[in-house]
Image 1: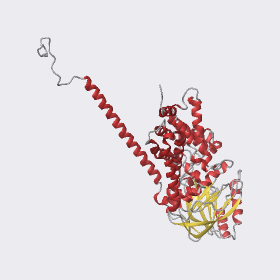
Image 2: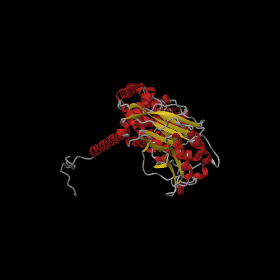
Image 3: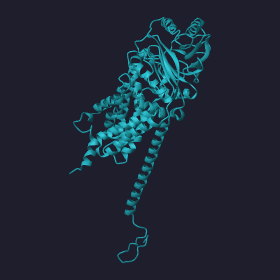
Image 4: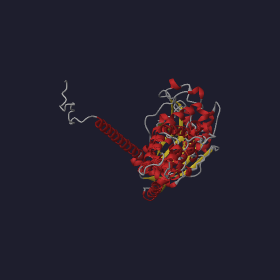
Length: 553
């Protein structure tokens, strides 16, 4: 039997990886390949920071999933790829959570199972002419839903969103000011889908190229016409104090003394604010008036307020809080922000009665931290308004967006990644400041205990040099200020709503299609039954004597 070229490509597309003799025909080999393919995007994030790789990093995963013999197997490949992605992006948690890291990656990886099914649904075999253009919207929308769900604090938060890999790319940062990191993720997935189609589906290269051209055109249009932060030349001099790694039983006292000494060196440099890192003070200042007095003396000496971060039991309410506390020449000013979004297992154990065993396996929190209830904008110096965040919170785009809308001139993040010094985590964390600054049009200061400390301007551009994980010192940054509201700050997560509309339209279309198919099958069944049933108007049967048959006789 002869096969046309189209039939051959369709057969190849549906059987590759499952034919006899292929290693990918083995579930074990295929599963391992899916895990590795899902892990590839890790190289786009710091420290490797191969930002350009993000535009093709998903292609091997997409090609593998589309070759699955069934939709069920494609969903399974999506799950395993998600496991690989989550494990790779969070690999630095292994020393702290050990085997629990694998459990979390496996659970969150399941979020990509529906995405895998969608890839197979739209790209398997030789897609029909309408499926490739639809895939350029549906598959990025599906990916965005995965990122949205896993961005919930209780599931680990929005660490490793695909769009955040573009933190040092100026055109991408301009896009972030329009649609946030969500728009970047959407476009990156769309580009990956188009490239995968170019590689695997010859008959659909025209819509794939059209998708790439449209993405480039949209990026160029945003570059030219999107509003820019309005800089008027005004600057704030903000100092960051990074003490470095200090261990031992007396670490809190030694750290405070080191921070105190580094802050004194800032005297006479005309700074407007001094920022210490997360957990820079290990005692409640109300319980330790001696420390409060020493901080007030520092403020008078450098002629600037000092923003510290207290990690201790509070004297006025039960529990441990992580709090940004502003100290002026007369002592604590009363301005205080209590951290609202806590790190699962790092700062609290979800369902501790059930999962408390995690504290014996890794470095999970022995006692849960307490949550704050509201965001705070503080006034320092000559009317400068700052919006503080604590560590993990800088990963959440909505927090910085709300601070900017509430009037913050500068965003501040007090952080500590000292448990992960030799990993990629410090660089990944510091890079998030570029995204938050670009999204809001407000400069952002990322101050840490042990590095990496960084400052980014209103457009996401780097200001000054980073303080790396090997540094112990202080640095003063002339931070440019900007005014105006970015489209993202004004309209919020509109790419997420767009993705929801796309998926809702898909669900409606598929539902209508299924209903039509069902009605057609019912009609065909009725026709078949009608053909085999005598017509009610058929003539009566006659007997051999040619008289009408009479029932009952």
